[in-house]
Figure: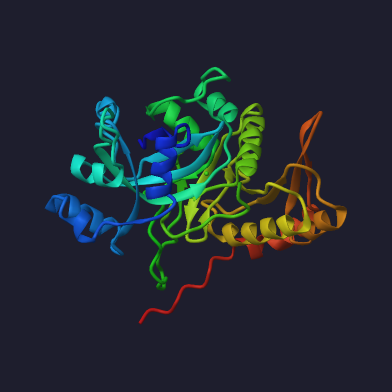
Length: 346
């Protein structure tokens, strides 16, 4: 199970300087002044993860050695400061090297070295508030994360699930070109695997972080479904990672959430649903676009034209479904379920 590190990064002049030196900018670890400080094993670890010879770095002092004993590549870091998670990163290489740490972050005469050094495979801006993070891990609302933390087990799982964070180590590799008879590389994303303010996300076996507002909408709808005895999961496929996948009464449903209900977001939801549908683990019976408020009638009609239901939040009832006609859905279902054509062998 992936761990979640919480690392203060903006509370003092020192950490702000460290951020500017090794997060805002990449460090060239191949230059002699850094390379000579690395062991052969550390050098190989960095080169294998950062073949371009540059990376962003962060660290921890000896006071946190026990916490960091099992931290590994693929763990997630939440960089906190000024009442929010400023950024989310994914751990790359990690090792202890006081000489390198002191070169990257020269300590004050009376201060400890940041001798646990780790590189970052990716860093993505965030806007998660302390209030949201505290609610996710069960802390009091006023907790302000004054020191380094490493979350494990249920607390880590809750953060990853609530904010839809998926590190690159979890993503399946990009599939090779299909050959005749090859199986579609699709699998359900178990919640314990999900290692995510953005409209879309990047895909390249890198860290995926979903728009904070979108993640909140998914979280609330997932609870809405759970209250009705339904469990929402996700699935990995060549097209990406679905927001939600629900199997109920033999009628699988693929759901795509958006953080807003304007025309652009409706079109994005439509396109992504049509992209995911052929890869549904079981042939999709329903495609649903989920929004925080009702789209314009013309945009709902656009979804219905393709047999796609619209679900939106309502203050009193929670969520309201505006379904496509049964006839249109049946007409379009064959189109949704058509698997991408396999390339001819040879």
